[in-house]
Image (cartoon, rainbow, N blue to C red; front, side, top):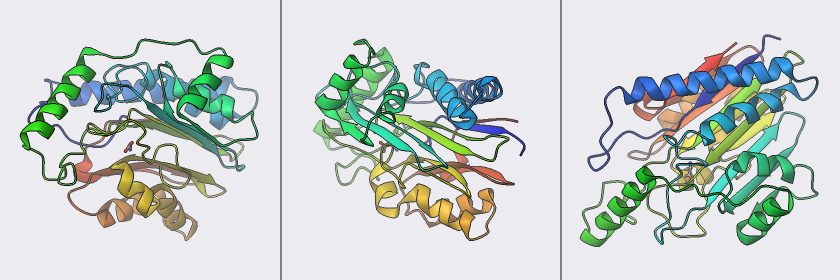
Length: 294
Ligand code: GLY
């Protein structure tokens, strides 16, 4: 099979209090393309578990890029704390995730370490303690941009000047999850996903990223990664819904477009997916930086 790696840098358009810098879209797309190429290089270099090696390598690059809401640069919670979610899944049935992980540079690598345990999901203090035990040091990861977003979110909350989709807060923008999917020559698939959550959230909030079938899904028909409004993605089982469409015979692009279309307005969502013979990428308003390497 032809190897391929796809990446994304998160769905969700710019807002009035966080206007898009000039050339931002092309620069974010270039970063996603670089991550996809690094994923493909890791796939080719790996002697086993090639698709997993690819999605981990791609995710690390995007987690380390402070422009994306994952790892370094992740959004802050309303109390100013930083908690991270990440997951990995493979088509042979492995799944592992961390949620509300604190001060750890590459949550996707901690998810990889969870894969070696009897568990599939560690959260909060237990996840952070596990990371330290596994040799992942405490890291300072709060960026100026994250602080600016946090201040803006608190101001909106205090003033009541919330965005239309923030009506239950009233705001849930800046999802900005990162993710990768890969197909290896041996026909295996894998997916990685990592996020700092949304712009307005309580400590302890967990979105779709570390939830099987919501943020990620992988099986014999392919691998899917979701980004966007985490709460709705969990309720709709976003990644699994796309996968089911692929299993029923849709090609990856058709499957994604159908699920994006079905996602309730005004909430934003995006997906990337690889199947045996197809791949696809799409998001609400087509706003999702992305990369592809094959
Ligand atoms: N999709 C990322 C989140 O809602 O946490």
